[in-house]
Image 1 (cartoon, helix red, strand yellow):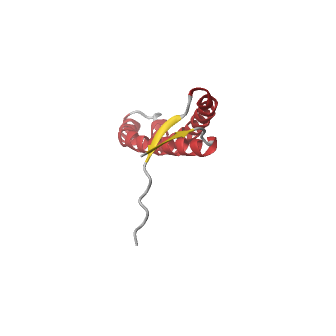
Image 2 (cartoon, helix red, strand yellow):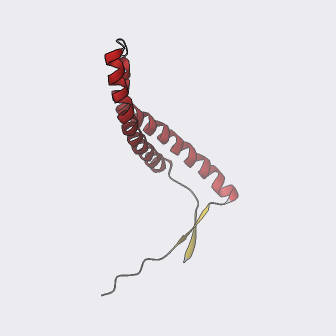
Image 3 (tube, rainbow, N blue to C red):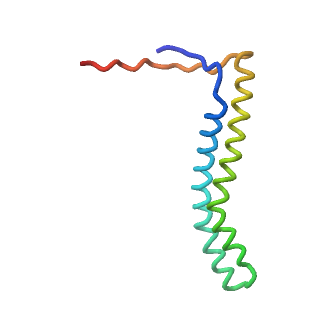
Length: 106
């Protein structure tokens, strides 16, 4: 096994990956939350007029949460990459052990 050091990270690809992961997690969480939120909103809407905003809020949560999470995850990824690139030359980068792939045998 060979040990290599990550000396720098490209900020935009890291930010895109961080944003995408955050967006997917937020989408899953929004779907799970809406499974509980929307039935509550439907019951409340029938019994208490004027609470229709609960239903609208639950519906838009599935759309808005992943977008907000992507943007915040993107910004976080950019900040992490910039800070890592600033600190890695000073304190050393992350050491990773990699194993060479076996060449295909013919």
